[in-house]
Image (tube, rainbow, N blue to C red; front, top):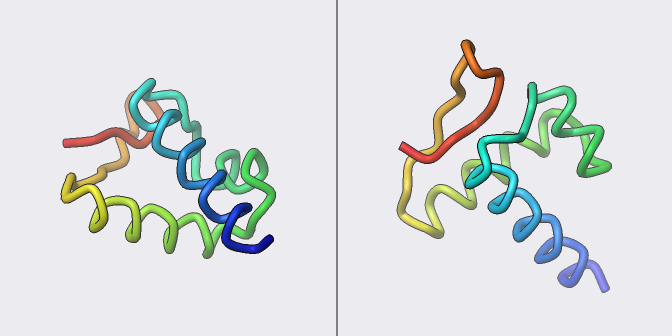
Length: 66
């Protein structure tokens, strides 16, 4: 059950990043139903897994793939 929830969140996060529609880390944590600290763990894992660096754009207030 936990793995399925984790995988679902990762897919949702990947889609939000592709659409450049994540919002701030606080908003993303709220959307995912996790802590802000866990958002950073998810971002690090996803970036490493996909071998694509992820960066935060302050102007657009969203995460995006480099």
